[in-house]
Amino acid sequence: MTIPSTPADIQLLLDAMAEEIRQALEGSQPLLVGIHTGGAWIAQQLADRLGANFFNAPLGTLNIAYYRDDFTRRGMHPQVMPSDLPFSVDDQNLLLVDDVLHSGRTIRAALNEIFDYGRPASVTLAVLIDRTGRDLPIQADIIGQSINLTENQQIKLTNDDGLQLMLRSNGTDHE
Image: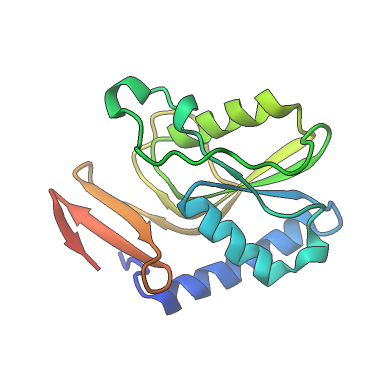
């Protein structure tokens, strides 16, 4: 299994995802929603590739911290940013974007928050990385790359010097 770790690797995945989104959603004028933070980074990259005319409004972002079902175990991140959906979701087609789909709990939380804003006509899920270890029956419609990881491995998107994926095994970082 090769993990796309360099900015160039990520850009190739984003190019392929943008083309798949174009084919799947052309003409539907979806609303673009990125899940804070990694999903928002990916959503912005997809928006740049697809162009402003592809979407029905500017990029919206969700911060699902208050919607997580493990909130009491994880606690609150000290710098929680509010969600920003500069549009109504009622009867709209949404393209929901996240960086890594793992347990499905982040997506469940995002869907709960979206439905607090209204009732979309449809939600298409796009993720850069789909990894093993699902707890909930949630799957992505558009996937940059699927990766099999063990239970003690984690993958995280960073944006220090361009988008990069970091693999962590038992507390050890690998690029």
